[in-house]
Amino acid sequence: MTLERSRLNWNDASDVDPFFAMTGRLMSAWTIEEFLASGDAQVDDVLHKAAKHGLPETRESALDFGCGIGRIARGMRRHFRRYVGVDISEGMIKIARRIHADLSNCEFMVNTESHLRGFADNSFDLVYSWGVLQHVPSKAVVKSYVDDFLRIVKPRGLVVFQLHTDMTLRARLQPRRRLYNLFRSLGIAASTLVKLKLHPYDRYYVPEGEVNDWLLRAGSTILERERHDDHAPHKSMTFWVTKSARR
Ligand SMILES: C[S@@+](CC[C@H](N)C(=O)[O-])C[C@H]1O[C@@H](n2cnc3c(N)ncnc32)[C@H](O)[C@@H]1O
Image 1 (cartoon, rainbow, N blue to C red):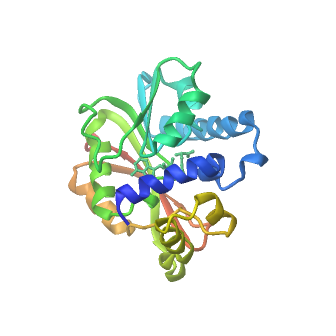
Image 2: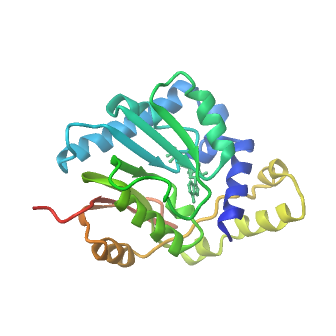
C-alpha cells in the first residue's frame, strides 16, 4: 500500500459515507449537531488533560492532523484563536470547508506529502492527531509525521497523538481491505464494494517501544501514555508529549 493508494481510498470513503469514515457510525444515524458535539466533548477532555500537563493558558493555535470533515474543528476554535486542519483527502477537506464555512480563523488544507515541511518550526501550541496514524501505510512515514509534530509545536506546547501499538494476526491480514483494493483496481465502484462489506480502511501498527525510542531520541519528554485496549484486535495508545526536556 502506498500513500497515494491511501489518499484514493480516503477519497472513496468521503464519497460513500464521510461520517462513517470518521466514527464507524453511519451518516443516517447522526444529526450534524450530534456529530459536532462528539468533537466538542473530545476537545474538552483533551484540554482538561492538557491543563493537567501544563499546556500554557495562551492558546493561540492548534493543528489537527488527519482532520477529516472537521469533527473537532468547532471544539478547537472554542479554545484556540486559530485552527488548522490537515488531511490527505481532498474529498474530506471539501466537505470540512462546506460544514465550517461560517467559522473564522479556521483553515482546512490538503497534504499528500509524507511530511509537514510546509509548516514553520515552533508554530502551534497544540498538535493533535486522533484516529489517523494507524491508517498510514509506512512506519517511516509515521515517524516522519511525528518528527514534524515535534518540530512545529512551540517549545512549551503539547503534542497528542494516538496510534495502534499492536494488532492480532487476523487484523494484520486485513482480507476485506485487500479485496477492496483488488476490486477497486479492476474498476468496481466504491459504493458497490462497501455494500459487499468490503472497505477501504487499512490499519497498521507501530510497537510502543519504537514510538518511545523515536520520542526520546528526538529529545522530547513523554508526559503520559494512555492505553485504549478495548478493541481486542487493535491495541491503541495515545502519547502526550512535550518538545523538550522539562526544567
Ligand atoms: C478515522 S478518520 C479520523 C478523522 C478525525 N481525526 C476525527 O477524529 O474525526 C481518519 C482521517 O485521517 C485521514 N488520513 C489518513 N491518512 C492520512 C495522512 N497520511 N495524512 C493526513 N491525513 C490522513 C483520512 O483522510 C481521514 O480523514
